Amino acid sequence: MKKYKPIDLSKIKTYSAQERKTKAEMGSFAKATNKGASFKEFNNSLPKFLAADSLREVVKAIISAHKNKRPVIIGMGAHVIKVGLNPLIIDLMKKGIVTCIAMSGAGAIHDFEVATLGRTSEDVAEGLETGMFGMVEETLRDFNMGIRESGDPGIGGMGKLLGKKLINMKASHQELSILATGAELDIPVTVHVAIGTDTVHMSPHVDPKALGEATFTDFRLLCSVISDLEGGVSLNIGSAVILPEVFLKALTVARNLGNKIVNFTTVNMDMIQHYRPHQNVLSRPGGKAYALTGHHEIMVPLLYQALMESL
Image 1 (cartoon, rainbow, N blue to C red):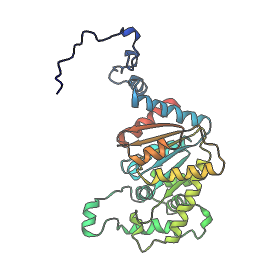
Image 2 (cartoon, rainbow, N blue to C red):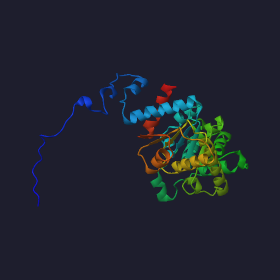
Image 3 (cartoon, rainbow, N blue to C red):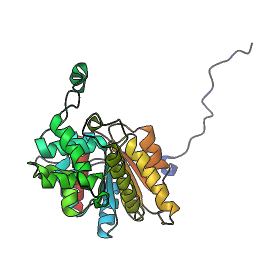
Image 4 (spheres, one colour):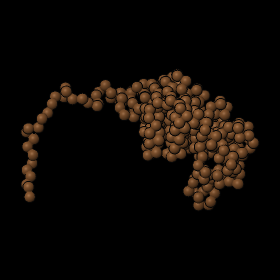
């Protein structure tokens, strides 16, 4: 068997630091700020690396889309609503920055409850033990009636139907509702449902035909919005499965019908980077793609304020 001796390092080749390319240099370091510093000063103090640079690029892309009247779409899961971020999303809608919202069914339920009750989100484990998880009569009744009571399938998809329902019933907190704001401002708010995934499907009030037709109408509406995505931005915030799948299918429809969608930006914002959003939102569609990882209740306000400073 061959015997090994410690290697002799005396003949190792080296080269000058002047010749070396480096990834980190002091001009990109973070800067200390003083007490009471403005948000602009804080933002400028962030190091010029990795996610901090990605955040800056996302802000630039959104501002560019806004100035050029290109779509800025937010696909959002329910958690965004459950951690109290509706006021920021609504303000972006009112300022004309966000031009379309795509929600999961759970997101629509929580938004509806915020508008009608001023509160939402229950203890799921406790409700499961008693068989009463999701069995709030007012939500089951009013949400489902909002989908089925129009009697006119042409009035719009699920998002518009629910938004109009909240306005018509004079929901006591409708100013905090993305659904109601979309209906009021005539901004597309689409709701994408998988049957059996939402509490409102466990109800004698549900009309499966109306439910399916309403969410299918919203899918076709989102396809129309994404057909215009060239130069725009699409963000996925907190949806791990449904909205990344819907986005990919809508993009396919848009391109299949001959729409040029080459230069655009996609963003995935979540607490962890899941497989499906990484593939369907960032990797497969093409365009520029950014992953911003962190808690929604921190990252969304950070993005919001950065946008406010950049307008």
